Length: 123
Image (cartoon, rainbow, N blue to C red; front, top):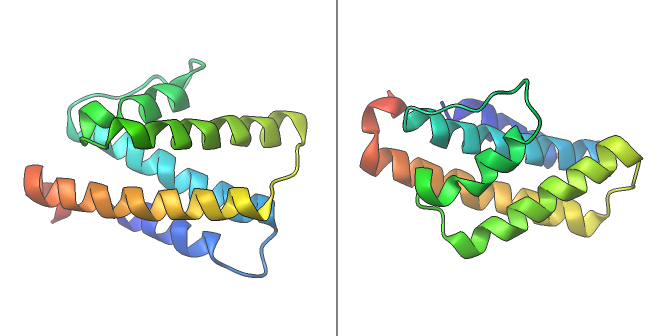
C-alpha cells in the first residue's frame, strides 16, 4: 500500500524534472497517503465531487492521528497545487522542498500508524 507514495516521493527528488513535476509527484504522494488513511478506516471520498482533496487532507487527524498543527501546511500545499494546475502559477523551489519534506514525514507517520493499528495492511 505504501509503494505508490514511496515511488512518487522518489520521483519528486529527480533532479532533471521541472519544479512543477517534482511538486506534483510529492503532492500526489500526500494525496495517496491521505486516501490510504481514509480507506484504512473504511471511508472514501467521492472523486467525482469537488473538494475530495481538501476532505482527505483535513481528516488526517482523525484517520491516522496526524497532528492537527501539521494539517495546515498540507492544506497550503493543496492550495498551491490548485493555483499551479488551474492558474498556471509557477512553483518555487521552496514549495517543492516543503511538499517533499511534508510527504516524507507523512509517509513515515502513516507507515508507523499502519504498523501499530492495521499491520495486516502492510502484508
